[in-house]
Image 1 (cartoon, rainbow, N blue to C red):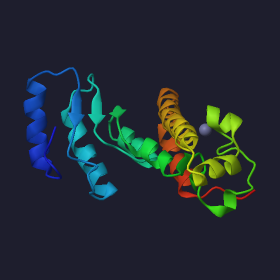
Image 2 (cartoon, protein in one colour):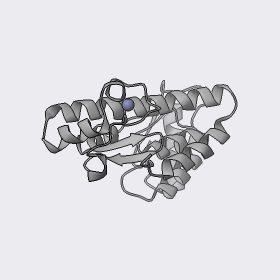
Image 3 (spheres, rainbow, N blue to C red):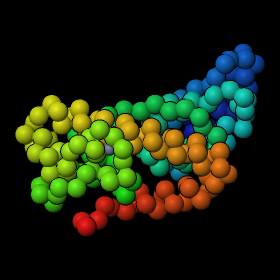
Length: 187
Ligand SMILES: [Zn+2]
């Protein structure tokens, strides 16, 4: 589905696509640089025009916050370069906010990247070691960071599904936003 940020074009396009009876619907032309509020608004206005029994896929989105906000507006599927590209650049998503592993404050930090994470990287590496690999230009840095960021994204979607199943998605959304807005504490 296309239509940029024009509500009427998107609704008209949705009507035409639904007549073709596809097994699922991809929403394109968003997450291309417009402010997040505009994207959320467009998603909220267009998903009601798509059948509830078919997956709705928001193309090229996004940050962890975008995932939660878009699910709240009726989205089921995502794809994005963000978790892998940011991992290669040393920017890591954690349950307490973003970590830039280049930062000197992690040089002697022997804690796991995210104590709440069950991935291979968090189970076996310290922040200090991950920083060392990054600074040394080791390819393992990209691999280990990518494993963690992908795990964080998949775990976020898993937690969203659980919250919906248990009827507490609204409170999950508020708590998730608050935690991610912070920066991980030093101790
Ligand atoms: Zn991890």
